[in-house]
Length: 261
Image 1 (cartoon, rainbow, N blue to C red):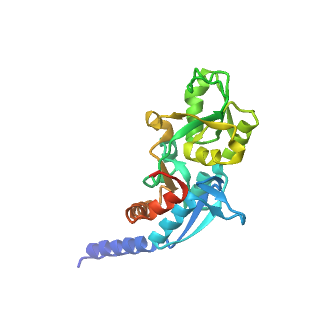
Image 2: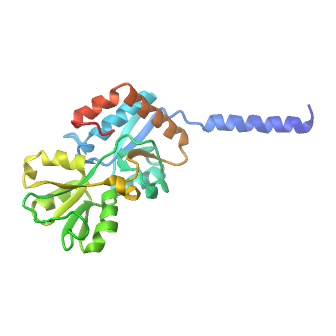
Image 3: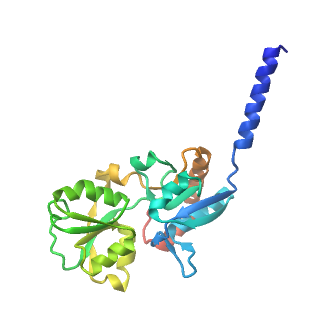
């Protein structure tokens, strides 16, 4: 073999060895969730995360043969913490949108959801659009698809959009009359409306999310770093597996009377 041939072979072997060393097996995965978005994610009496997102994450980890730990973070800290390497994945009902795709990678969706307006039962609002909500105060959780929709499509008509750090805070202000309406995930609202504290209120209208893909995206996915394409593939396979073997349906039926996949 010539010196050039020997050199090329040596470089190839070093490159192969380097890629082998750098590849991760992902036997341990750190998952972030918000913990304030029932029934998808919340804290139990021992401050441990529970909910649909958490159960799905645990099922996916089992399929991948990985040990997963959970970290509860404020919503606004989720993506920064992921990209800073403090966690490996976000499983927190995060909508897949073009804006977020510029910051992170997403798996295939693991559920999709409708969006609805809720208001007091005696509300006099006649139309749930920019004209009908003129001069009304509408609450919404900050940095969500619903917030972006209201700010772009409703606020220009004269509505005042009030942003909240959690859904619970917005709901509380609706009950006390500080808000005329709230826009939120219909599944979350349905859970809240089943509680005695919400007897004042009801769902008034749905937003046809299919008409606004730039806001509501492609469903909810698991967010990962763009550099972790191998982990994206592992999660995608695990999602397909739990849907196929019935695990997904078992978890779904624990929380909802209809499929949200």
